[in-house]
Image 1 (cartoon, helix red, strand yellow):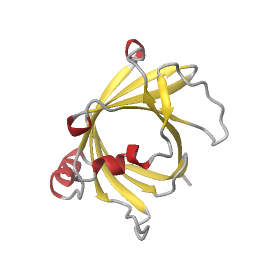
Image 2: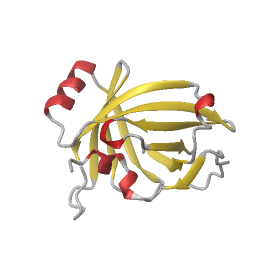
Image 3: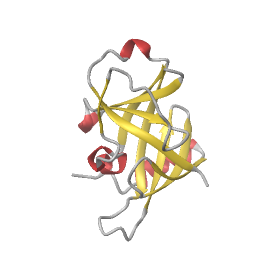
Image 4: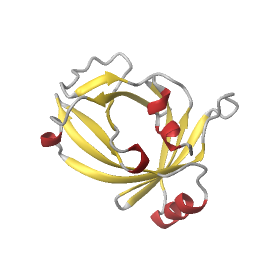
Length: 156
């Protein structure tokens, strides 16, 4: 079963910027969001990255590991869903890819109402994987729900 294992960190400073390997534009919204009573235990996200589109289903589990299923979909259908079917506000961000210590880190630079929020993420092979944290990565926010994209997308 596909699992996403990742850790998230706030950014301390701009020393990561010179190390950017590539950047993607991302727009994403949610068709289904988990609720506080946990009667809905997953999220369903539509994401457009440059010229590709995906539908992603993730389990609600907190921590660094959860179920994740992601499938490519036609980009025109994704645009329609983002515009007409999402129950959340659209998140727009730039995702910067940064190699560090033989791992691929990403830094999400949020636009719009979440600007200037910056969150670094690292995907792991296992929950026990030992990684070296870059000096530009600050406080770990993996378990802080307010930094989850599902929370950031909620209309407020």
